[in-house]
Image (cartoon, rainbow, N blue to C red; front, side, top):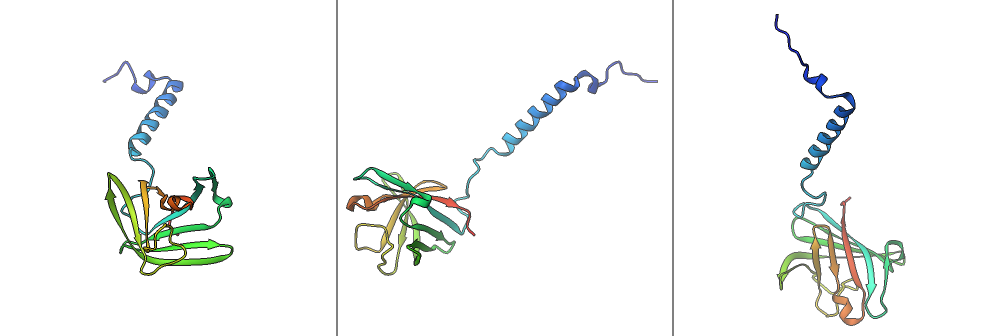
Length: 160
């Protein structure tokens, strides 16, 4: 009859076994989540919600419920978008097309409207907005600052 002197499971004490298992679990969870929990930049539709509004001249900012208006963009796979703004209980909407452009090493989301609209955030009469893409879930619109308008920050949220 074959006998072993040691049993593998007996070599590790129960208290230490628990620590080893927790360590292994932590290692496996880190390995399986080696990418940042974030959004896939190539998945659509994408919803970008106004997060913060700030004014350069008076050095003030407002967030979420304090914002003068609520606003979001929805980007679709066919390169079209809808911009919606809720201000004083009135919903304004505008649509157009978008593309990503690079300028001086920075990436911008360029939104082009077919006609002028009061919710286009820029200083020119061109029906175009440009938002600086900071990450897969954060963009900044600061073109209004040049004409004393607000800077706008957007975060990507789950599209409904």
